[in-house]
Image 1: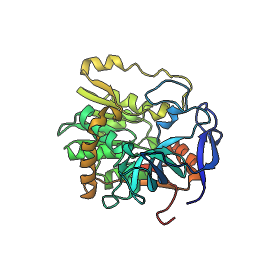
Image 2: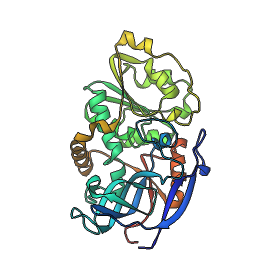
Image 3: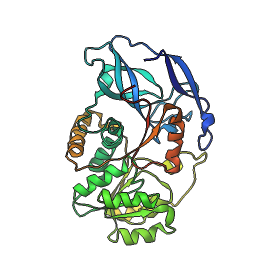
Image 4: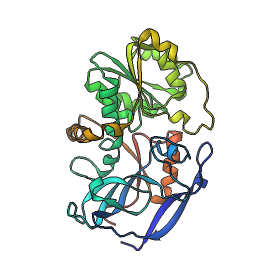
Amino acid sequence: MTNTNRKWLLAERPEGEPDMDSFELRETDVPSPAPGELLVRTRFLSVDPYMRGRMRDAESYAEPWDVGDALKGGVVGEVIESASAAYDVGDLVTGEGRWADYATLDADEVAPVDPTVADPEAYLGVLGMPGRTAYFGLLEVGEPKPGDTVVVSGAAGAVGSVVGQIATRNGCRVVGFAGSDEKTAWLTDDLGFDAAINYKATDDYRAALDSAAPDGVDVYFDNVGGPITDAVFTKLNLDARVAVCGQIAHYNDEEISTGPRKLPGLISVRARVEGLLVGDFATRFGEASERLAHWVASGELEHRETVVEGLTNAPDAFLGLFAGDNIGKQVVRVSAADE
């Protein structure tokens, strides 16, 4: 272990799409754990679209970062020093850390990582917050029934790819929107989606849905917003359920655009639209983690991580989310097991 800790700070609040001017890499001393804490060396760091909202000086469900703050995110790391009886040096844990080489984490707020179930980076994706979001968002908000048609936007991402597979397990017809032929092929050939639409190669989303979802849409899991959502809302069936998980198409907007008025269309079909925050299900995280781990270990649930190498490239990995660079979960490998 070195005595130097590199960490990324929020250098300025971005206007529109962030760029490298929003980030500053600074070197500090490696922190020491207080009683009940762990000093964790970051192995993998998660970058997620919701982090864009934390860069704004605006009230939201997640507390905004102040300029000069160290950026926070989910990590998988190795315990280097323990001031808690709950974990030993060498244990792998996951929790909210920093965009940094090292961080101190409260031992009560981390979970163990079992590399015999899946590679450690999977604990930031299918076995972490995105997997739990998919699990509760689809099953509790979407309430899929056998024979339903489920449409997923951002379907090749960390959340959407799990949503589609769980929907398939529940006997649904599953249609995914994704941004490349490689992604749509992954959805249909590997994950079992019944149809996939490359939105970047499609001019008419409504016509594409007519072909991919000829019986209409019973459940829509929305990670994107924008024109895709506008099209899906015109295809909602009677008693359809819409889970609004993300709106990445709008995260860099400086002004709120006015699109089609959707509310009148909900009246005739009596559709239900519900916002989704996975934290609302915190008391049931154990349930989701257990089932997801079982499905992954048995090979019933596939997953994929796009790994960017090196802490210095963490901002690039984050910015790549808005260009759709990732397939599955976007993570940064900060250090290797043998370092």
